[in-house]
Length: 345
Image (tube, rainbow, N blue to C red; front, side):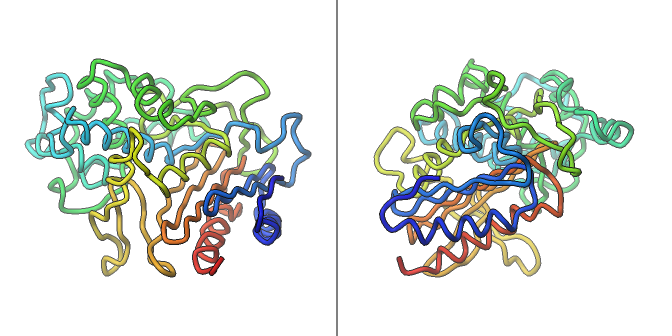
């Protein structure tokens, strides 16, 4: 555990929150006006490598990295957010005219009309629920499936969460730049932000957190996301995620400043009575003195949460090696960030 001046109160609150999360390994970390506090725990014996030093799978939180990359390419004029995705991919024989109207912005904001995952992948998951169907799903198959998929609605008219849509951003950005998605993300996002502990592939033995099934004891192999890398392949350390959230809180004037500001702009409202706001990549909820922004993610054995409150300069990272509705990590992390947003100090 590390604390900074003014940090003991936050440390106590983090320690209390850790006890409310039912997971083998838990890390909660807060940055507040640049001062960091990290607390870890869990129901399992502590691993040989301290929990805060491990690298965790981010699942859908990876989407915020991919869309930040997309925003950076747009800021520098490499592409436009309103380009049709078909203009940024190899030529495809589209099976429905709506597919040609899907833009990069639609993919980023889940308004493309594409289903959550491709039908063939869904069918495989129903037959083999404990197997990772993403690992064998390559880019050629992804593009072929996109070409024959009929959007559920006209692009831009409804919000419908789609791993399928976000996955297409990877090959679209790669085809546009001539650089594959992992190298592009590393060069334009990870290195400029100094995220040396963040990767898209497993690390060496002992450095990666080991996920578990819902029973909390059965280990789960590392998640290979195949062609869905842009939607869920990033893995990172608590320290790197604090650096990542601090970059969003204080964009400054660095090479990603324009993109970091772009992804904070509210773009659409969704949900019951349109109460929920969405930026290019973050969920935005009202809070004291200004909105808080957040995103969550899960793989087959891990969960992740990152959120921040620009008005108070507060960011929160939560990571756990368990995926399950009884874990309470996401709820606990959100409630803690909301409470910290209302604090005066």
